Amino acid sequence: MKIAVIGAGTLGVTTSLELISHGHEVKVFEKNAGVAQEASFATAGFIGPGLTHSWVGPGMVSHILKRYFSMQGGIKRHGVGIPAGWLLKWSKACASPHVEMKQAAMHRLAQYSQEVLKSITEQHGLNFEMSAGSLILLRSESELATYQTHLKLLKQADIPFKQLDSMETLKVEPALSSSERLWGSLYFPNDAVANCRQFTLLAKQIAESQGVEFLTGKEVLPLSANNPLMIQVNGMPDEKFDHVIVCSGIGTKHILKNQSIPLPLLAIHGYTVSAAVREPIDAPLSGVLDASSMVSVSRMGQRIRVSGMFEHGQNPKKPVDSVSLLYKVLNDWFPGAAKTTEIVQAWKGTRDVLADGLPLIGSSGIPGVWLNAGHGNHGWSFACGTARLIADMISGRECEIDLKGLGIERY
Image (cartoon, rainbow, N blue to C red; front, top):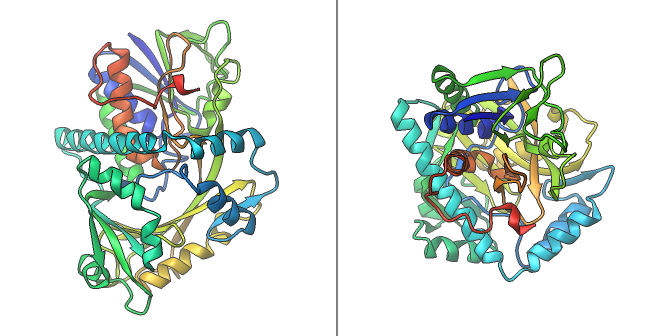
């Protein structure tokens, strides 16, 4: 079959790789000059179910809004507020009796995606910056309490984790500062940190060598209401496809604006800072998440990447002027580990977040139009799994995991 993929971030590239392996004819359309230029460019890098959790759950409305309106903890607003309709849907989702089922679906997807990533890596002999294991750093016992539901679901799914005290935590990450308050941690030995953009570039090379055609610098116009399988790009002849898969992140709303598909997507911005390792002995071995600030510090080869913050609205400042919290957390836990006075990359990325906290995978309800959207913070963690699932659905194959709760039917 002839298939169009819209978007060449990690979602679009991995989807094209899976489709070409099924024998389909695949074209990928990307508005930017290259692949992995937006949300996939400089992610925190965490993959696996351990750090996969949404901001949908009991008590999350008051917790998030308190920090949002006080502009504390890296949650900030600029200009317009969050739309009332999205807030209402989010509030209902947080109060839903199915919250645990939804969180379990995220864990299942993250674990499956990690398995698919491993198989792709081994099949093609890929070598990209990857470090095993991840930690959630806890400054007090009360912080542990906020993860009890998360841990219960991990236990039910037989996903390994360990609760460590401060001394055990230092054995896993010996470079952690002894002057910073550390009560303990949650350790996920099967999780990992990996370079999303580096993997995406390698996957693109493989897909291209197998016959996928990448059309970069080609912005697809919104799908026609009357003929949604006709791809239109300015300066190019219209082209009809058997299937169209939208992997456009926050641009999904624009691509589908002529369709009657109710997608409560919200644009949330986050930041990362990347710098070279100054001295390996002072740097993290893998990745840690500071539970208090929700800022992560991860090791990617000879670089350290610090990631965090949630913003809504248009911040007029440059990324380099908006990342003081990231530097603070880095210096709290790994002082002097990175060459922050030399070449530093400060980056701002936009994530597409659905009101119920879950991604949207599968048919859009319009014949031939498929969605791979709403991944929020977990696009990299879910990418390989969602790509294989969509390819299996289009090819008429049975999916390898239960997709309950991840489809358009929930809207």
